[in-house]
Image (cartoon, rainbow, N blue to C red; front, side, top):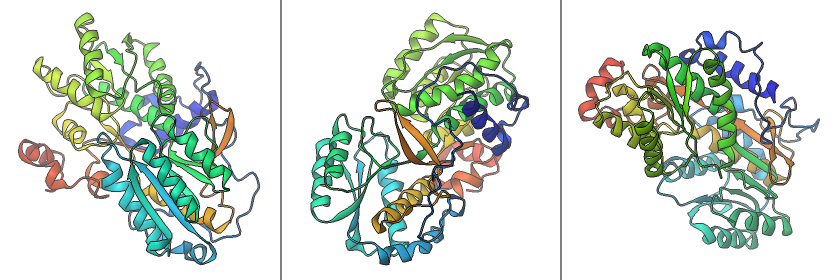
Length: 413
């Protein structure tokens, strides 16, 4: 486990100037005492196990927001049979599925040479996901890409698919206890490291004296949360041993109103709290509003976030959030679509695509995986990341009261 944390820290330090502070200087030598969570393989990260792909080459490093690399997979389109079915969740709290994931997946398949009749992308609730999977398989689907985050649905889909010889790719959400063949998602351990390093960087930049930290978590039922925690706990442990104070650790949730309640209770009890590790932008929004009502000034109370939401980015510009972990969805969509193209054609995907193994903590089975690289975004690099990727339009980001903040950050509106 120690080598995994060191790997993530070294990668984070090398990959983001915004968080490459003195905290990174000892990444290669510092020893961590962190309990093992069976989420990431302790192997080398080479997931091919020596297998050689007989299909066209495809590397994660080639993916960009033009989707041009997908055309290299056209030979697989001609070789494969049947269709690819994508089943995503219908959720009001994760609007990115409709705004980005679904259209990006469709564009990926189109540029890879599939006809409209050879793929489908649906967003459905709960049991409707199972019905859709069964229908797709019965109509000739040869691969499924599934994000089944509703309780009990994922294992049912994967059991049915396995019984019919159809491989499943878990997308963005690992189905615990499932029988999927592959997983595609962002590196959750690195997300946690980026959150931790981002807070450290911000505490220094905002000159917070005697940091008194509340560490807030996501829902404990979420597989990714344990990995986030390992990442930021490893970073913060070094700070707590050198002067920072770990004041409070509420139970954790992905419900913003519950997160606000947790924060309010702890802030009332511990009035010395002056910084917060918050695991996503949605949870952070109500907390930041509460701090503003309490009279907390900009750039005095560091907070963190994840998902690069419009509200989170505006809080960053206004000086109430240090940064956010950005997950470029075009990476995930193209990687999942490419993997499905190999699966549909019956071709072993290359190690340059399937780059890691994770472990399902319920079954203790290894899952061949594609882990993608998130980015730490601050006011200084919003334009070169979020705006450049068209994830958020500058006109929306810089509307109204945020126009002057955008101007100060050098963001052209």
